[in-house]
Length: 264
Ligand SMILES: Cc1ncc(COP(=O)(O)O)c(C=O)c1O
Image: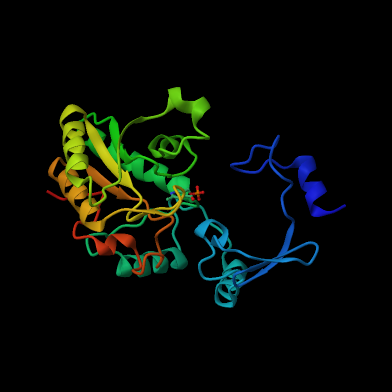
């Protein structure tokens, strides 16, 4: 039996309506930007498997390093334990992050990274005995499929059944040259009328919205306004991170870099 038939017997795929979707393509091999299916057809993986294969599939350096690591220490729980690869990775990440970033919290996917960032923003104010229950996010943003991430996402075709259970989020349009004053005015009203914990955004480009760009100057102005109201700014660089916008991280193109901890 071909992969496609075996798949259909037992597997549900993400972001897929199985009544209407075509059968999935069975992939058996990948190299660089090319995928090979079970019939020998090749495809260019133009979306880099949802932005994640930016160093190329089966990258020999990464494959070798992973093989070596799996033979030495495969996994250890991270609560109460630590290890050299995690420490080295955090040191290397902090070295290339904007200078106001000092700490790394590891997650295994984009949605849970967003979830953790949202929880940090809410918990930060909880620890200060403040109930801040609202997030600010862009219209048409996409941040993932867990509950906090779904709440922050404006693209809601998959969120319908869950809408009554989502977090409180106020939305603003992305800043463009023609609307900056209006967006700033709307943000000011939201900040004045709500208890906002965090502003979450995809910096410079909204990937799932169709690679929709906005202005760095405009985003800077919005972050500055949020910071003036002590609202924590969360840059979701799941898509833009690691060189996609010409700098390691899109926030390097801003004057106001986000941070989750503001020492007083
Ligand atoms: C900007 C952004 N945030 C979060 C996510 C969610 O990531 P994941 O699918 O790994 O949960 C995505 C996924 O495409 C994304 O583009």
